[in-house]
Length: 295
Image (cartoon, rainbow, N blue to C red; front, side, top):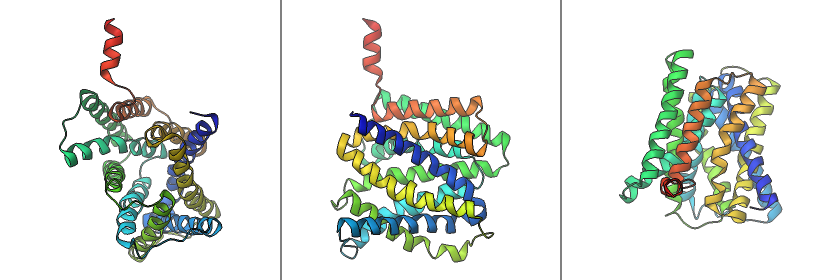
């Protein structure tokens, strides 16, 4: 990996790690619906400005069904679920639960293609579940019963990302930029009615609105562009390493800015989830490790 690609990888991880910080800051005052409508709305407008600059026309009507499917699975549903969870659990835990997406992807792949899981995948799934169990235990002791519901919501958000990744393998072949641009407009349309059902609880402060603006422009629109550039440079498999770095930044931002405590349960849970994700995605395997140790 070249130095520019490595820098892009760490910048992307830092940006996506910060997204949970901004959601945590704004979720309780704005509520999940208004927060996410602003997030996808700001992202859609930002990508539209980029499209004008790049002279890219979006064939929204032609691929309307596709944009609504990917907009629901990859943006509207997971964003809303994470925003709901952010009302209760801290940014550190949210970022760790987000990193279970490849684990859910493996489970969906096994069910979808009816393939037999490898030993590495089974160990990875077990480690990932152990990490989640540690986090559930930690939060159920430190927060009220809503913590369990919030954790389930965050896990369902990661599952939605996993389903979206499998859908894209069989979806119309459009450019990554068009997928991001079209899906953000579709997500904006889908979330809009919810703001009348789940309105904001109070008038947001300037600090909250700046955080929401950063969430939409930086953590969604610009992050997508960075991610797609990374895929072009180093390929989708190597780009997935960002998943392992996001929890590290999520924990750091939560501690530095929101003064969230980093307990042993958080660290052990994060390590289990990250190790499980590495095993499931094939970044580390059991067999080569065993062979080296038997020589």
